[in-house]
Length: 139
Image (cartoon, rainbow, N blue to C red; front, side, top):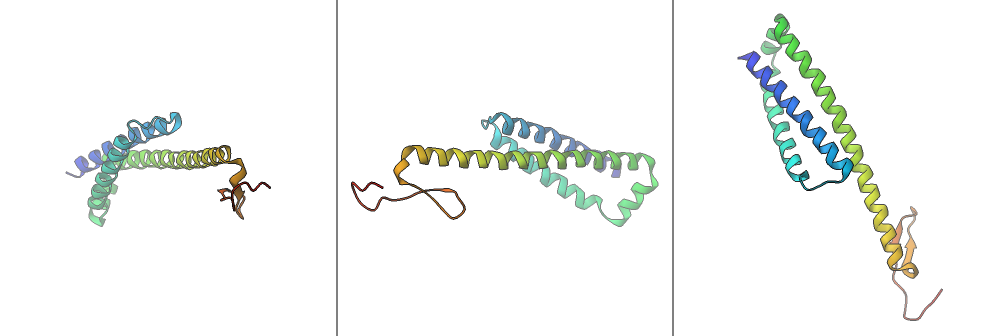
């Protein structure tokens, strides 16, 4: 029973690693056609992992794992795969941040290009689309 749960958790985490790799690919090449499906699968896997983790993290279960070499080996594999998933998730988070910054910069460039006379800057140096005070006023 316990070995089955640990093996299922190992499968879930391995599946999550595959999903995170696919998410990274989508973010890298900016292919968002399947991105929502990937995020949905990722969320389902994370919920399954959390549910199984609650079942596996009680004192009795942890003691049984310590007493069995086979269960300890599965637990060690789980920890290694989980660490890989955490690293991938960090990379993906950074890719999302960079993408958002790139989109913000592109939007600023578009704003600037569409109304060069109406562009102003705020206190932080970001572009703002200002309003002209009146018609035919030139600075």
